Image 1 (cartoon, chains in turn brown, green):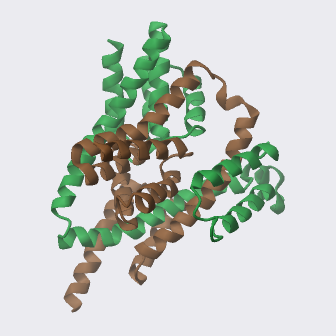
Image 2 (tube, helix red, strand yellow):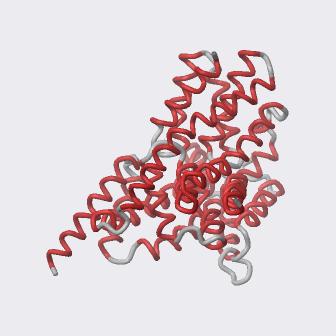
Image 3 (cartoon, helix red, strand yellow):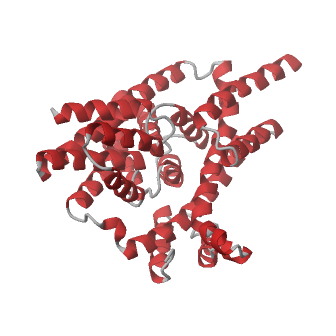
Length: 180
Length: 201
């Protein structure tokens, strides 16, 4: 019971402190899930992200469901998911009922322009950490570079990129097995 | 009746919007037009709020749209909050079911050669996608692309105050002792800097 509540509380904290959607959540996830509670390794976190990209729904929710499931099965998944959703629910309900012109307040705009700069730096730090673990050799480095270019320059959808990367991974490892 | 409709509409959105929160946006425009629950202008405001409050954008949108639709249709704040609850639950339900199934299958085949090899390709791809998302945020936060298009002067493309803040943050987040702080500390610091120096004004 205590661990279920911890899952709820941890993901509620992540939900309340994430600004700017799923990717911005990564630094918070690394802090809470990997460093603090050790519910997953960096590599597992990345796997959840990759799968969260090509399964339906919000990536943050998919990741919460995954981590909850891995710790305490279906019930854990429910608690973690409820946790990540809870702060949004409370905050948006408050804004919708009380602060209807929230996003037009100048100070709110200035604050978010500042926060966006911080989100960039946090993502940069998260990526450096992930890069060290996810790119063990030259082939993985090429996959990384091609995906980055395809996504930034040609705007290729992750739904296409993720399955292709999985197939290439299998192809490369099969070929390596044959070489031995 | 409206709750059942809300459940069905958001369940479909949750099931078919693949690729994160912003993928729900086209579904919501379609929903507004078909069901008449909210106008395009209202939706644009809701997107702005969802984008500038904490939490996953897709969940924020569902909560907001659920509230607006029901509170306007039934003219009741309390029912609106209940509508927010129904919309959020319905959006999340299909992805929870799918992820639970995927997680169980993956657990069973964790040591399988093909699954392991697939992850060998997926991990660098995932890092690449996250880097790409970071680049998109960086273009908005650190550059003045619109201003540059207007004036054509190269120096105008650089958002100097933002770049200075970014440089300070890069140093702070890598200094021993400070870098172990919770990320929210840096976010709060940046919000204050943003307000004091009127970022984006």
